[in-house]
Length: 55
Image 1 (cartoon, helix red, strand yellow):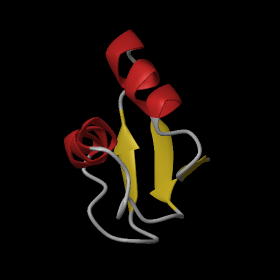
Image 2: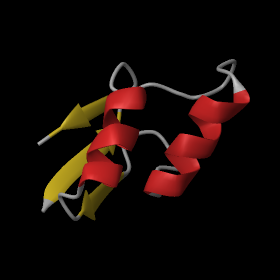
Image 3: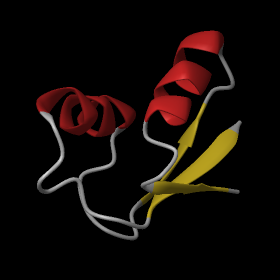
Image 4: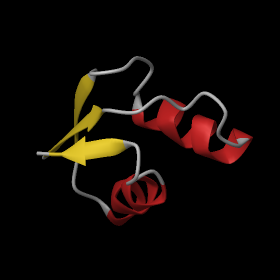
């Protein structure tokens, strides 16, 4: 399992970035979600890596 925390807002970012955050369940700043370590999830995290912190 991977813990991901949203540390920067998705406001002002393009639609794909915001949709990726929503797909990961990151809807608010400082929200932490625990996700399975699958290739699809890793790809989504890599796409928004400049907005999140991985624990």
